[in-house]
Amino acid sequence: MGRMKKNKPRHKLRGLQDASQRRSAKARTAQIAWTPLKQACGCVVDWGWSSQTADPMTFMQWCPSRLAVVCPWHADSLAGASGTDLPDELVVQPHGTSVLLHARKAAADRYELGGELATRLAHVVETAGRGEQALLDDAPAGFRSWLIANTADPAQAWLEHELCEIILNQGRSALPREVLEHLPEQLRTSSPDSPQPESAACNICSFSAAEGGILCACGHDWSCHPGEAGQGEPCSHCPCTNMQHV
Image (cartoon, rainbow, N blue to C red; front, side):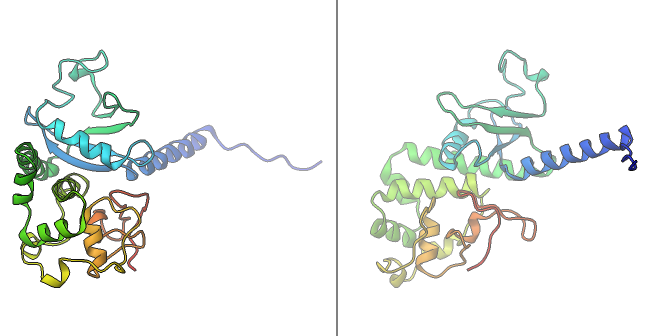
């Protein structure tokens, strides 16, 4: 009669299950792109989105509305629970949408960035409220000329570009404003044969492709991969999980 395989002790099975759950939780966290924003109550909240449950455009449209309201933990009630009863990390479904977004209390080292991004975002929202001409006047002169020559709605293109850099890329810029201000004339109009990413979510991707910037294999500019080098650099607005230079 053959030997029977001994069962693993229960404490070891529990250990394996706990390790598996930790790995799963870590994987879920890694798939969420977080952006800190200071809200009306003074708290900084990390707002996040995942390509599994949301899309970048909805996230960009959601974040500006956070500036004028208090954080979930200072709100009167949410889903029937007072703010003090809520966990430190939440899943939120914006009204009228089918997407799910994430929120968590920001760590102390995110407070400064959250304040800076909120200030920049408030400026963009205020400028947009004054109309298309105000938006275009706010764009660097050289890049404004490029937008007028290469986009159907240059004011909207500049607005989306700014929202992308502030919200999706956590304030990172592919090119300094000084460079965009003084673009050489030959770069202000793109050749019809210039390579373009198939799904550019911000104009800097198209501009970067047109003038030979640093691109990922997914076609987007390096600044759209704000993760840490060597630890996975997920693209801000496509499913690419790690930047690969081309």
